Image (cartoon, rainbow, N blue to C red; front, side, top):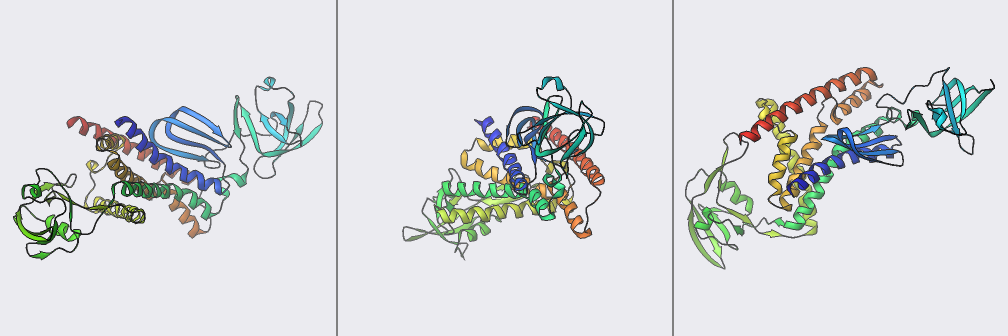
Length: 420
């Protein structure tokens, strides 16, 4: 079940990110050649409409391959012999470049002119040296080494679309991650309930300071060290900063006020380099509400994003350490640990990861969505696009460095895993 949980969590985050790209690209009329989960050799694939959907071996991400982003299909030049298959309207539906003997009713011409981008025509001389001219269907297939690839007229390519359409197609991936986090948190709160703001105890942990002091579910906390407690957040703001000193609690139990002394435990926060907080071992009441779950899902998604941005700022200004990062191995290990605590914990953890991936992809790093959006912003300021070749080199170098970082972090994760 842990392995299944890991596959579902990682797969869902990648799937919805790429689905965001796919939906917006298709809405803009861009030909999407492949929707891939993972990198490397194909494990499974099928084709629907114009897109091949694949699962690949290395679960390090995914991609949507849009026409125009990579070098297009095999270039046909004048003088080449090309086999044509026509539909009932006389339009070319297939251009066969080799292995022509495998096809029946194939018309072969020696090309004198061809335009697959704008005019969609092909001209040439047949076996009788007669000049022929044909219109090419905009969804025609080019067949090379028995592999069929759909042609991409310029109006179906990524670069032909408006700046807004291209930006939307790129931004849709991270946005889908935020949307996924919202729905996961909505489901979490709908299932588990929303913590009440009223300072009334819902549960008491066994063998906690609160349990040893005799606090029970239903007790309402009125004061701590003579300070009024109006909301649950007031209690947290006092207890969490305690360093192990005894505190006087005034409680209301079934209409009767009592006073108890509690010394909070001091616990170290994981991953904070020694930061501590006080804890007495109580949690608030939880209320179930559809509307409240929607609101809590939205606000918690925003809160997670703020925390991640704050952490990134601390990393940049306070010094970068490789130990602050987790790669695929570290994420899989943590996901496995969280999965053992049940579905509610797994929903929250998946939401946290999804927000992380969304924000990471929006950073202005070459090869990531944020880096590509930065180039679009520069294009908008300049009024014309940058040299595609130079931009491609920048993204290639950025991707190579990113993969190097992933390898280093993964090695560090493996060492940390075996050390524990």
